[in-house]
Image 1 (cartoon, helix red, strand yellow):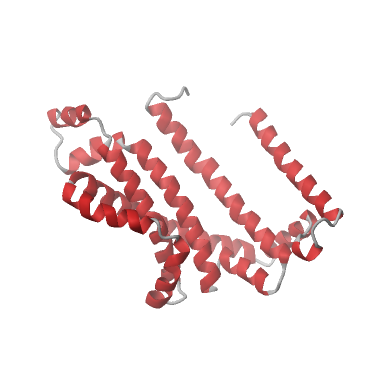
Image 2 (cartoon, one colour; image 1 turned 45 degrees about the horizontal axis):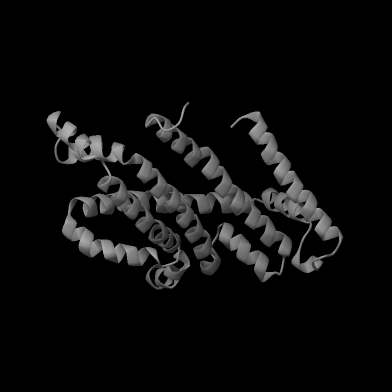
Length: 254
């Protein structure tokens, strides 16, 4: 990202803050429903100083990383299995499509019954939200691997598991990255939704605490943190991986 692009983004967000402050000062929206940027900033400083915010971020990210790792591993296995076994695709594939349509938050009641308000429950919701998106994209990627790649791999002595790991997965990587990105988005929503309902430590818990005390500044501050983490992960992880993959496949210039 060059300096000009960074400058545009900074100017854009500064502009949002300025408009936000103007709207607050003009009392267009009641103060109890619309805090000022200064109030939100003070809340963030206070939550950071007392340790609630860093601990909440660390807890939510730990649950996200564990859940997403399970979802990516399981989703890739399911996707490859469906791509290689037509009977599995005709049966299991339709089930996975149906399960993907279930919102992450809808898994919360089941998680509460099975695990109670625990880390395991939050991780279950995270996995359930991300697993099926990863599996469907993995399936699409494997099915779209050019047959010539498979023939070339077999001619070079690759077979079975070796053919999957050395030929199919690298060739399907653009699809896999798309699946990982979707999985991350669903997983992040699942973590926050579960924490709100479970009332366990994390960013969702802090969000729910703000709602409980009718503290609009805290609710807004935590929403900004959640959004900020999403922007940072997308920009510093997935955007870089996507650029590398596109460059590797000759779709963009370095």
